[in-house]
Length: 312
Image (cartoon, helix red, strand yellow):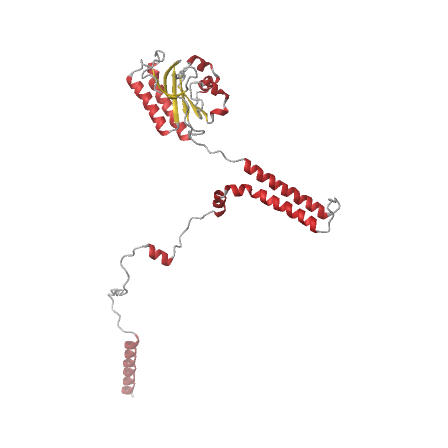
């Protein structure tokens, strides 16, 4: 009996061991990940081309176009006259409706149809008048004007060479970068520079020189020196003070008055209305400070002397 029980326990243990072998296989402790190489043949480099983009299509942001604004810009005359056509057609439509209908030709205040027709006629007439205003008012194109005068080059002969060089540098810089066509520098009650295009005398055809005494008594000079700030006359024809600048060409379009400290003034004439930008004005202000620092050392100069004569 004891032997049979022992054999039965051994048999169960053997079966359990085999079951553990089946359901719990041996797992190695040192696991090393193994990655298989992808055998798909992907291209190593991708080249973008116009054909590829055209086949797949561009899905990024595209610049938007305002078709209405472009059409209005390209058909300016048609758009300006369009209210006239709309108003005329509306007026004819009201008159035609009044004629073919059974309504009396005389307007009756008690009739709703008459009141509607009067309102429609008023709107049609308003459209016609709007079109006429649009045709009469057009933006004026601003272009550069060739100054009417003679070329001149007048510099005080008693100035040192480096001061003359700096004055000429200032003029060449202004004439090359901005719309400047004339430059006059008055310092310590003396005109030390008049260069560029100057007004031409009607009597002898000579250059109209600067009358410093008359200029300093004018309201333009005194106003700039009193404020100590730059004055920009964007459209010289709108300012009555242009009569105080007879030495500039008669068709000078714009003028900048740049004070040189408290002793001088630089007058710059341009050939374009509103031709001096904000950057130009700031740059001219810096040039004025530089000229003032140089001329302050040599304020005791003699009256203006012709250096190179006048070239016409």
